[in-house]
Length: 218
Image (cartoon, rainbow, N blue to C red; front, side, top):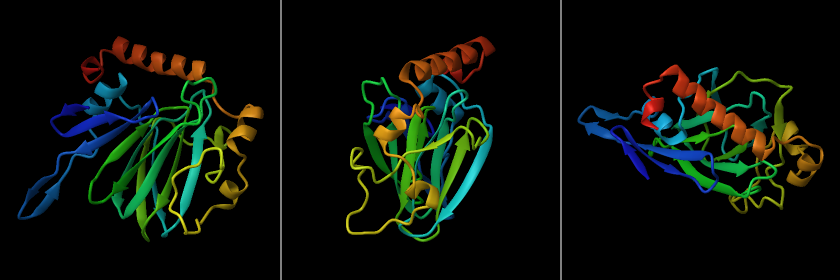
């Protein structure tokens, strides 16, 4: 675990994903947190976040979104934060050839903990809303491209994701029809591990050549 003044950072079990826990500054007026810090992200990943798009998603209780990813190139890195409600957030390694292919990690994102998670290109992302009006905000490295978007079924037994037991998820039609992990791999829908590693190295090289102050902290 590493620490920057505004937050602590730890890698998740899935390589290429990190959790960020901000320092909570409290006084009689309330609370202040820095939920995104460019230097903290660059120290973890080796490069700053290129901001191509921001998303704001509001979900009813028991909504399940994902598992989603964007094919490379260009892929889509995501910095995900929950300013309202709470959600079980899951990151899945969907990179064929990765030593951790199919591995997942999960963490609670909530308005109470103000935790965020960064998800590198090639990793899958899904979450289950625990409350009505749960709000998830995404900082995305690239704009949404429907032709590059891939979904894997979030209830695939091969993944065995840790969704709440005894509750029925609310799924979009698209997610309900999504292929299993095995089907997506056989259809060549998923980005290869080697291609992802080349992409991450290119991001770090570009950051170093640009002289980015935040990248020099990595």
